[in-house]
Image (cartoon, rainbow, N blue to C red; front, top):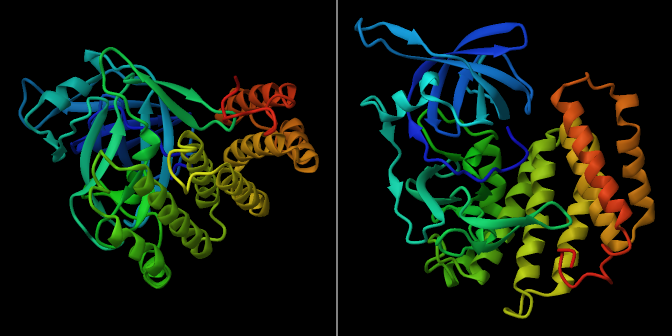
Length: 398
């Protein structure tokens, strides 16, 4: 499973198709579960590390021989964005992203335009910068839960000093939107709240990445206070017009959900990093709306950032190599913001010594992430004086 919830920019279709996956020197026949111009999900027998680069060959029905298939040219620069075990014993589900737009020779357009494709029920959006679709809640089985993603190149995006996106002016006549308001999907029945479609059922092949029974037992006991707030303010909370107050509540629900997910999965760093990133994004939502709502204060922003730092620091040993690098980058940024020299030194040292203690293979995705993280940490450290909270009015450098 991915430790980052990605913004979906292409419409997904429920298409089951045969394919062949190349991972280094290993070739495996796999099954595609859904497809878009930007990526797909597949089921395979071998685990593959996230951020690995792979090749994918898609099979399409033969135009001359009924019942037979033709293999298309391999799609290069395919990245594994997330991976999780399937409940079908011995299999894994991978989320693949196409780094470059596939051509006609790759078979994507043939499948997307063919009769065998079945578009997921569309949730029509009034805002031209949004894409909407329906998902099913893994926790309670509620169908047609509203989920939103941001259209590609619809608004100008700039990351704050913590790597969290902020959403500016729209592009080419699109409608303005602060996607941080809609980043989280809320089930209207049980109120389970999480980012992305990894935590909701998008297609029939999808399986939850957590023990639903264990989660529900805790969730149904601990959500009462938040659910009472939801019932008082639920009108339109699942719509694209979600208010600031409703968005704030969605982040509170997500904080509880990921606290429970961490408790029932104490060795899984995915939930640790996502919990911290959600809190950092919540802090950005508060910062964007300072002065507009009474609950959005600078003090609340800082509490959320300190919570994110505490979660990562206390559970750092649960993170894998890539999660650890990205977690360390966030810890460095938060430490600079608060002037926490001790934590700053701890994680700068971790990044500096990473290739000595972990020895990532040259050219591997880990090595590439290390290079990117070091560059960002160097920039943050060099700007530590102006990135301090006393020098910034927002989380964006002026």
